Length: 131
Image 1 (cartoon, rainbow, N blue to C red):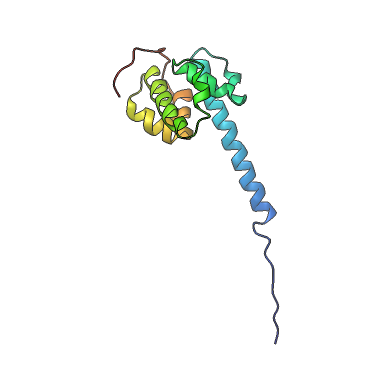
Image 2 (cartoon, rainbow, N blue to C red; image 1 turned 180 degrees about the vertical axis):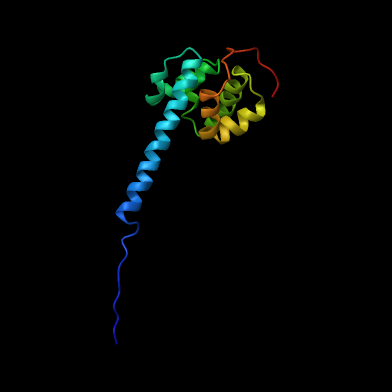
């Protein structure tokens, strides 16, 4: 009997390189989108590439106090805080709460490019309202 066996090492190097290039392109696109959003809000766009500072800038664009950055490191609380910040950013760009929840909270990889590269203008923090 012949028991020839071949071992597969998973993805071929070519496939891994293709996925890697696509991943890097996606990350660069997202950084550019955040950069544009921050620039529209009068904040330094380069802050999009600095870890934790980019979260701080999102909080400031939302019109919330900077100490909310601490709340982002508390498990479960960070989900609620990020939802509030997303809703505030949407409102400050003239968008509704639906865009805040779907576009910025759940699908931020779609929502932030829409804000950054679209025609939305930053209107600044506005008085709180019911969501």
